[in-house]
Structures are given as structure tokens and as C-alpha cells.
Length: 592
Image 1 (cartoon, helix red, strand yellow):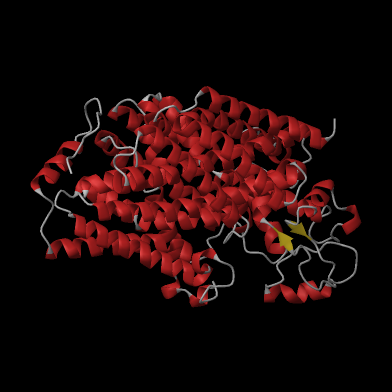
Image 2 (cartoon, one colour; image 1 turned 90 degrees about the horizontal axis):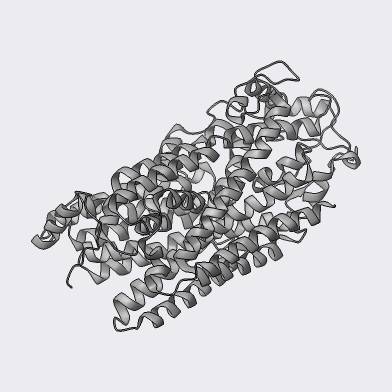
């Protein structure tokens, strides 16, 4: 059986499963569409949350970023997992006790203001649309290789599949679909890692294999990787070669951004009781750790495998001839995500750091005219890993299904957040309070369909790799929603004016900073300044600015509070009551 047929069986089978679940769990009411009727078991909700969380950025892109940067990109792991601890301890149980469907719902009622709700909706839409671009990008990459189509066609197929099960099922269908998707993606991620760890170190546990001895050289795996990278003019893998300030700010941005992401927070509105919200967050962290502890091993082993492929006799010997390149390179060249150019016309593939001036003399002595791997999209690394390691065809089919499950599960959660913000927070709560439940459900489905169309369009020209695009969304969440939620729970006196000004200051400052370097509204070639460290304000990367935006948000809110009246007494009593996360968790209703 050829590889294309195997891929079709795995991908097609998983899609049929997701769509069948969506039909079985079809939402018939707004409570089912927005919050799965608050009947999801904490363990299942933890699994669904993990799938919602482990997006294309986690599955497809994170290991690629770690592979090509090394220790410096461990910030993704630290920030994303640390954020869940914040979420479990500081936000989830309190938001569940408040008993609303959405984040703007909470902010609008807690800050007793329609304007606060509208600002929260605007922030949610900007965050979720930015985030979903990364998911669609990752899905397009996966489809393009495994269905042997171009990336644009792959993106359109992904959009069609999400449209069917997300629009049909709402939160109820999405939740149970995500449970299935978690099972698919964790198996798909772990099995190739076990194979590769066995090949390189003889240890079947990837987390331990990372720190084991490289069988061929007799050196520790990471020491061997450092050695070959330095021999080719690259930076060592295990050293911190970037800015410590950016590393700290980026980790903080991811942490508080995690705790402020609307599509993650709404998952905790689906459990029966307040105590279940915290249990769900704990289970989610366990399920996430199963993948996140494997990612560093996948990244480092893949980088070593790539170098061994190009230099089969060692870095001191001649590299591989272009015509003798393995099938995985030929396959990925067809997608346009991998490309070579024979700069010195010797018929071989030179892969080295051509920007390293100290290495330039060595390269010239060997007759090299530049790095000939001119394109290597980092998002392909995990998907290509089984082929690079020459694993069986069924493993390739499995990882195809896993990569798509990761991208589509998060895309569905984000689209639901967008849909509920439009239908519930704008139409139902603001513009047309008398809309019927059937009308609201129809509006939710229409708005989700429109969001899919917009996400598909923006996914055709993403502002970076999947994980980089997602990191921007975290920065926006960190600077806008997280401070407002924190102050809404833990600051009894914080008033609506302070919260609104804080959100606007945080959101606008972060958006302006990001757009300055990455293009206005992410439109290519509209950036004011080139995105290079020399141009960054105080050396702060656009990816790291979310933490700064959060500080500006808090500062602006408390400055305004000092000049205005505190929240009304009834609101302060409400805040006091939700800070004790006990009870059945019935919705708290505030009369407007």
C-alpha cells in the first residue's frame, strides 16, 4: 500500500470520527452551544482542554522552534505550562462560580458596564483571530504534505472540515470531538519520538533519551549535537545565546497570556461544579505535560538527524549529493516549504551558518559559496520527523492525523469563542436583548462561519511560523484581558472606568508595538520598522511585549481608580462572594 493511501486512511478515518461525534452531540440549545450544558466530567474536560490548548503551535511548530534555536526557545515550554498553574490557582474556580458563558460576559457584569463588555469583545476578537491564523497555517502545512497538495489547497480543506463539526456541534460537539483529538494527537506525537529515541540512544523513553548517550558517537546526545552544530558554524544548542531580558519577558507574556486566553477560560464554564473547574485545570496540566516533556527530545533529535542526513560521513566529509537526497526531502520540496539552491554548482547540498564570519574562511577553503538549504520552514519538522528517521509508513499516517487533530481542535475552540462573543455578547447582551434562543443559536452559527472565512483568508499570509503567530495572540491576551480578569476577582474597589482604560491602554500599546514591526493588521510589507533587534524599543521583541502591556494595563487602571469613585457596594459584595470558590456553582446574576 502506498504512503498516500495510508495517509488517506488515517486522516479520513479520524475526520469521520470527529464529524460523527459532532452529529451525535449536536447542540440544540444555547446552553449546549456555549457551555455544553455544564455537564462535562472534569477528567474529560481536562482532556478536551489539553487538546484545545495543544494547538498546531504545540504539535507542529514548537519542536521546530526548539530544534533550530535550542535552549533559548525553552521559553515556550516554561511560559505555556506556567500559565496553566496561574489559571488553575487564580482564575478558573472563581470564573466558574460567577457562572457566565464568556469572558466579556464576566467583564461586562463585574464592571457593571456595557462599554467594558464591548472593549472585552474587541480584545477577544483580536486575540482569537490572531491565534486562529496560526492554527490554519499549521493545518495548511499538514494537509499540503500528507494529501500531496499545495499549502493553499490544504488550508481550504482544513477550513471545510472545521466548518462542518464546529458550526454543527458548538461547545458540546467540540468538547467530545476534542477528547478524541487528544487521544489521536498524543499517540501520534509519542510513537515517532519513541522510535527515534531508540534509534539514537537505545532508550525507549524520549524524555530520558534526551539525556542519554548517543549510540553512534558514545557522547551524551546533547554534547554530540553541540559538537556538530559548532563544526558547521552554528551556535551551541544548550547555551543561552539570546537576550535574558527578552527571555524573561517572553516567558511572563506567555504565562499571563495563557491565563487570559478566552477560548481556554470558557472551557471551565462547562463543568458541573466550582470544585470541578480546579480539578479540570489539574488534569489538563497532566495531559499537556505528556506532550510537552517530549517536545525537547523531538526537537534535538530531529536537528541531529537532519545534519546526519546531509553529512552521512560526518561534518568534516563532503555533504550528500543533491540527486542522492532522501525521499523525505523530495516530498517536502513539492510543497515549497523546503528548497535547495546549488550556489557553487558542485551537485551537493551544503548546510551551514553562512552568516558566521569566523566560519567564512573554513567554508571558502571547502569551496562553499553559501548555505544551500535556502528554505526550511520550521513548521515541517515534526511532520517530517518520521520520514527523516525512516520509520514505517503507518507512523507517517498517524502523525498526519495527529498534526491535523492539533490544529483543528484549537481552531474549533477559538471559533467558538469568536462566535459566542458576537452572538451572545454583542447581539444578545447589547444590541438585541429580546432575541429568541433559536435566533441567538442561528446568529452564533453564522458568526462562526464568517470567522472561519476570515481566518482562512488571513491564514494564507501569516505573520510568522505557527508558534510565532500564536505567541502574538498570547501577548495580546496578557496585555488586555488577563489584568481585567485579575482585578475583577481580586480588587473589590476596581471600577468600570479603571478597567476600561486599563484594557484600552494595554491592548492599544501592544497592538501598535506588534504592528510596527510585523505589519499593520499583519498585512505584509506594511510594517513601519524592520523586525530586527537593533530597531526594538529597549531591545524588547514584539513577541515579548505582552508582559509590558500587562504592566501598563494595571498601572493605568489603578491610576484612574485613584482619581474616580470605587465600584458600588453591591459589586464589592459580589466580588467578596466569588472569592470563596465553594458551593454548587450556580450562576450569579447581577441586575442591570
